[in-house]
Length: 197
Image (tube, rainbow, N blue to C red; front, side):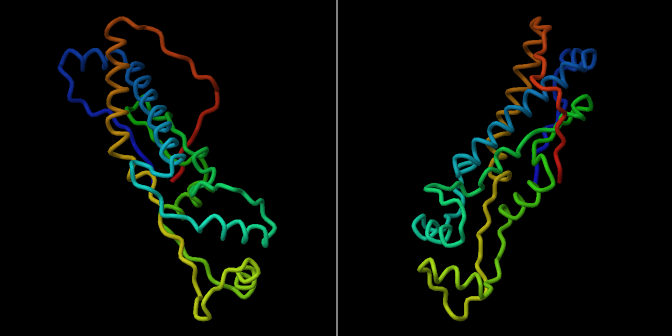
């Protein structure tokens, strides 16, 4: 899942000619929109409620801490449903000159983990898992063969939020160039990001 920001030309002939004669303006404006969009998506993930739609609840904290201690994991008092996946959201501006930038996952592993989280998945209850739950004081029914992890949609709920953000960012940037702003900010890093599907 990803978000594509595209320039759809509905401008006046004057603005259209300005953009056509200054293609770097459009590329710069789209990069600005992508940067603001990825920040909004990251903020939505961190809040646990992207686009105002709360993620499905996790296992209760007391139960989760007991299970983590039995499994020898790092016992945390608080846990974000998407973990650190917000750090794996970025944007690909390699096609900005063609009028398209893409916001999405920055690695194959993030696509896999983010996809699982967004779609939901099930875990088979093995004997060792059943024993771990029992040691943590969590009783699983004898007929329980699967644990279901509910879906946690992230990108789709953010679409109504990021659409106006991206649109305003493009408009503001283009308007600033029309009004004489000839400087474009230079990237803080030379790294080129790629978004994976």
